Length: 333
Image (cartoon, rainbow, N blue to C red):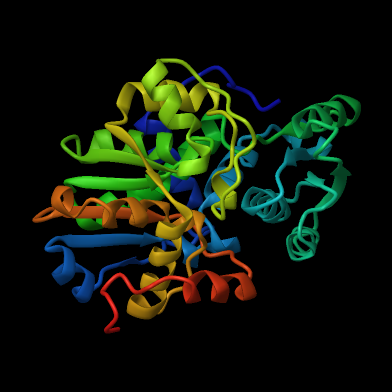
C-alpha cells in the first residue's frame, strides 16, 4: 500500500500537490456561457477537466500518489483496479515517472479503454466482475510482487491531487457562492471541499451523484457509510457502491448537501454543452451541471462553479444520448 493511508489530508496537501503537478497536468480552462448565464440569471464558471490529459481529472491524483513513492517502491511498480479514467491515469502517470503499472480490469471492459490503458504502457490483468472482487485481485498481485496499490479515490495523496482542480478554479475566479462537484467514490468532492473551505469558506458545496447510485446521499443522511447494490446509470464514472473511508470523513464534515441527477438530466446537460459551448462532456462529467440546471431558484443571482470531471464518451453513444432529449432552452435552439 501507499504510505499514509490513515491520515486525513489538509489544504496544505492540496497546495503541495498543485506545485508538484505544475507543468505535468494541463491547467484546464474555466469557461462560461452568456446564453446560460442569461437563461438562469447567474454567472457560471465551468472548470473544464474534459480538456485534461487522458480526458479527465484523474491524472491529478494518480500522478500525485505515484510521485510520493520511495525509490524501492518505484522499482517494484504499482497496481490499481479500474475500468475507466483512473486506469488510464495511473498508466500515464506511471509512464511519466518511470514506474511499471499493472491495472486490474474486468474482462468485458470496452476494448477502447483497454487499448488506451495499454497504449500508456500498463499491463492489464483481467478478472470476472461477476465472480471476483477487483480490489482483492489487486491486493493479491501487490502481495505477490511487492507493488504499491494506487486506489481510485480513497487515499490522501490521490484526493489531494484531485483537489487541485477546485484549487485552480478558486484561484482564477475568486470566491464563489456555490460549487457543484460530481461524486462517485468521493476523491474529487473531498479534495474540492478542502480547497473550498480554505479559499472560499462561504461557498456552498454540493456533491452530485446519479440517482441510481445514491450511496453518498444515503450515507450523509445515515451518518455512516452505506453500501448499495451495483447501480446502473450512464454516469459510468460514478457507479461506486460505497464512499471511501477517508473521503466520507471529509464529506461528512464539510459538504453542504448531496444532490441527485437522473440519466435524462445528464443527457440534457450533454446536449447543452455540445450545442451552447461546443464541448463534448461525458455523462459523469455532467453531474454537477445537471444538478445546477435543476435548481434555478437556488442559483439565481449567484456566482456558480461547476466541475466538469471528464469528456471520455463513446461517440456513437454520445449521439444517441443527445438526440433523445430536448434542448434546455426549449424547442428553439
